[in-house]
Length: 81
Length: 81
Length: 151
Length: 151
Image (cartoon, rainbow over all chains, first blue to last red):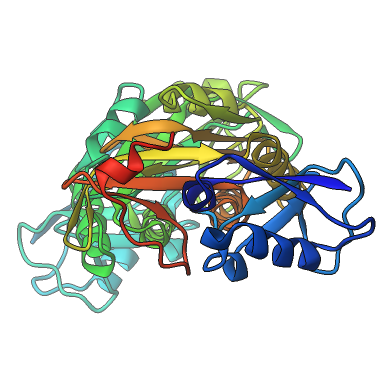
């Protein structure tokens, strides 16, 4: 399945784009997405261990499976306020 | 010595005046002032056990002696804020 | 800065006063006149103070807060006289490089003000009776006729 | 009420919004842009967010605060885009019948907002270098030329 991962802040800066399109097996987890992202966008490798991911606007653990069509986002440590 | 005691809030209301003039012995304490006030203004007797006194704008304990000319005030429990 | 005032408290001016390029956090507390105390309805409130001592105590509170916390600025204003429902009777505004200090100082200032500063409020209930508020002291209501004889 | 806005935060309007005849206490927190971080001087800040999720998280925070404390009203506003020194990046305004609840809820809201809401700030230092702020993640400064290639 195709998964589009939105990027923000330093992740967007390092990747040089707002989003990355990945092809993942059906039933892939956040953990697999993390590995695939590190392989395809090496500039992100250093920060990926420190970021969270969100699925449909909720924080998602590494073992969360991604449904086809879900909105996925890479969430570096937040600094609002 | 003559001591003028300023009254506020319910104490002023009960006494029907802003201040009371007392004659106290030199070196009188707040405790003596409390007794003298209760004797001279019986309307205050019920509240006097619950009020504080201030000498020159500072809270004063019962054993504090009153200097001639000091500014003395009766301070019922406060309710500002 | 401390002030006792008969005029409405200008909270925007206070916020502007304490805001600073050195501060990352501003905390403002406003005490406002509530309409209901349990099931009793308030018509309005009157505040009076012992002016010399109230000013002195407020200045002491400001000084103590500045010693205890790293504050950029601190302003305390108490209103006096007649207040209608919803109006602010007191404002405490503090700024600090860090929010923890601003919250702690703001809370300590209003808590301590309510314990030590010689200011008193008189309730006028919806039925016209009045009552000085003295925590720990049962004063009971006074009817309007009795009350009109004193200021 | 929650809001994300590109315009300056109107703290007077927020205070007016949460003030109520049912509330005796209003607490307003403002996070403002500091000029100095240690000895480094900030020129300005830029805030960006993940809009759908930031709105959802802010609404969850408001709901949770209303469940945990007896609040009369609650408003949270976060600014986005370019902020100059001294401007407010965030405002939390809560009202309650009692001040303890107002202070606790205000503090919890800003503490939790800073942990969970997907908003990020980028420092532009006085020397023109920029740096995304990610607590726990050393990102390092980017020089102006590199930086101009991305939005």
